[in-house]
Image (cartoon, rainbow, N blue to C red; front, side):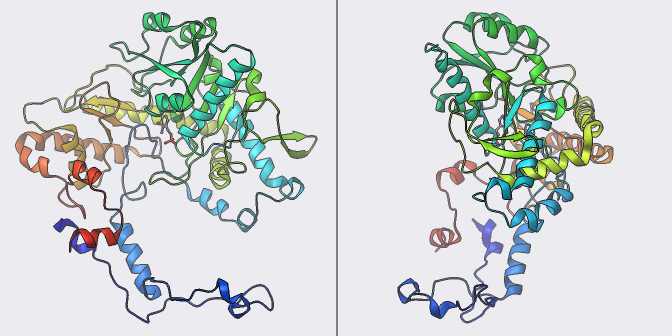
Length: 488
Ligand SMILES: *Cc1c(COP(=O)(O)O)cnc(C)c1O
């Protein structure tokens, strides 16, 4: 508990003030014209601090954090690429800030145009006919896509299809979303090469299967070479193909899920398309469909007639999945990102992110176990240190990296291996950054042999050192007041 002592931040001093209220913008209106019953009887118990106190407080806290703007952040399956500042500049423009979703379509033609054009760009990138930008996250997109899948079968009178096939390498949200949507899961195991086992797939298919959820490259960073055959088999059995497009980096400008036979997919704008994420911030999970599924997209859809954009409400739709049209400021940033790069440079994202992952993989094969050999796509997965005799685990390696100013990769996921370390460098990192990361990883592997005890206690230089994660999960202290109570 000593760890937290330097965080003491009770800096309130009675009577200290850090603000002045502006005059009301509505003429003839001020506090005294409010109805007395609406006014507080007592002063609220808020911290009394000066502006400088507040600035120092938050600036100091921000220095205890780690972000993509602090250092290398190779968190696999999260695509922690740099978020260009031009996205922020445009999202902060007054024209976009002073608008309300209940304004008439005739007043908001510019916003609707951005919506429409972004869905068209995503269609072209992914090879699907139409998009909705309404879902608020990847998992929300999955749920929306599965609702469309369900609606399609139901409206055809095909009521038996209650199961969804999910490979064991899938992201955890896949089975979770399918379960929330009311489907039962059929899990199929991966082959030793990390791909879908075709024989198991055949055995799982029946007229009760609504569809299959897949991502390609999969969560191991491996490309499913049999994808056309997989799609054919699922379609032949009457099911639909769902693509988890959370991380689209490796594919950009090179292959398209629509061309691989997928009918529905979601995209995480907050991964591939450079909008900020992490810490539970706002996201956006657009869902795209083939033409025959367009009627089921959520309401409202944004359409165009001549040069006029309008909200379209479809009677066969699954209904609304969001308040209004989704996270506008998130898809605005993604729109700016795509426009800034253009077609040719978008393709470079695919090439460079793949090159970077392979560069890292090849340089670490000596020190770390590589359970699945061969070419990686946008990320690579190791199964712990090669030398397992020291007792140093993947968790210890991840914690020690923090001492060198590197964010830990994703660990213990995918679940296929016991000591998974999943590294996704992304395309925005330079060769120099990758080289110094490789050097740090090699150094850590050496330290595991020379000083395993030190590794067990890492990190040593961060504001908070090794925490007891079980205790932290069981005994959550989420506010400063709770902390004080706990430490009286
Ligand atoms: C991140 C991710 C998701 C979930 O996206 P959220 O926005 O976190 O809900 C789904 N699938 C894969 C492969 C992912 O990497």
